[in-house]
Length: 63
Figure 1 (cartoon, helix red, strand yellow):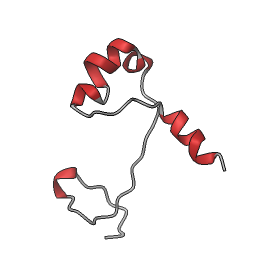
Figure 2 (cartoon, helix red, strand yellow; figure 1 turned 90 degrees about the vertical axis):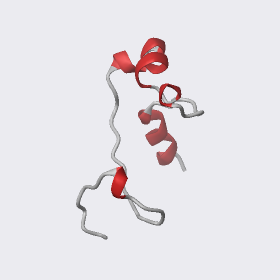
Figure 3 (cartoon, one colour; figure 1 turned 180 degrees about the vertical axis):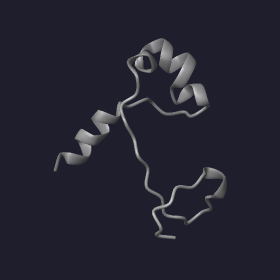
């Protein structure tokens, strides 16, 4: 599309190009309770570990 307009995941199809925006979450959601019982990947059924976004950004900046 290349328009820069927002869209919802219900309109996405395989092969679409997207840009994701991320920001640091509230500390309450980053606690063991918050991750396990409110907002972590496993809470939503994903079998992946939570990695804070600032760590992901730091990894991308390291050559």
